[in-house]
Image 1: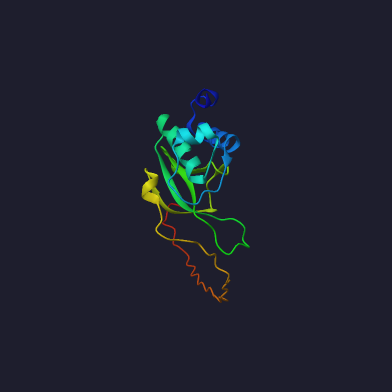
Image 2: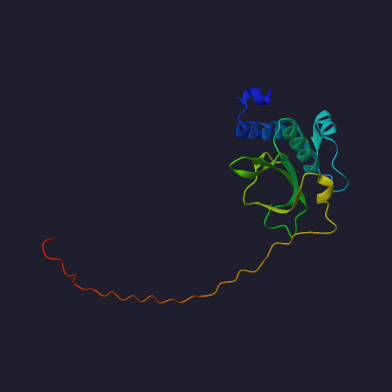
Length: 163
C-alpha cells in the first residue's frame, strides 16, 4: 500500500510510513519492559516509543531496508530538570548513510535527538541506569585577536620580445 503510493521511492516510503504510524497509533508511556512485537503494536494501534520503533523497524526490514533500533534522549521542554530515555529507528540509505525516524512523534531525527546506543536488536540497547540533566551554566570567554599582514611588491622583469 505505502510502497505503491510512494512509487517504491525509499525516502518517500520512509516519510509516509513514519507519518502513518504517528497518526494511526496512539503513543503511550510505558517506562519498563521489553518492546512488544510489531504485530501486537499494530493490532492494538498503540505503543510506547520502543514499541512504535520496533513496528517501524520491522516494516522497513520486510521492504528490504536495513534498520536499527536507537536508544537515547530527545530534547524536550527546557524547563524540565531531566528527561526520560527515548527510542527511534535509523534506516540505512545507500549514498546517504543512516537516517533517523521517530514514529512516536512523526519526526525525522535531527539535532534534538541524542543517541546513546544503536543495535539491530532492541534488547542490546537496554540501559543499566541513566538520565540526562541539561547544563544550566553558560560560559563566555572574551577573546582578543590581532591580525597582521605584510605584502611585498616587486617589479618583475619581462623577458625581451614579450612586451
